[in-house]
Image (cartoon, rainbow, N blue to C red; front, side, top):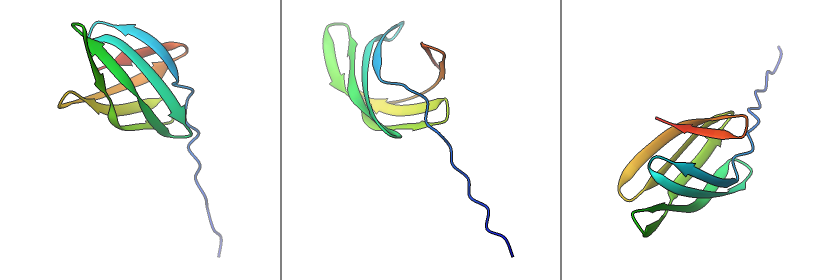
Length: 77
């Protein structure tokens, strides 16, 4: 019998991003994200931040966000 292991290396997501939704500041510790989203002068902490490969997800202000890291850019859906 063989054992197969799968490692998904998280993309480097830490940094500051100017998005249509506002300014997003992310801190990263391995696959976990923390930080803030500033919209309309109001700063909201993000919760449940995760990175899996190039895919990211987090919650802020009662809304769920998902996106993808593309080089040094972040594209939210």
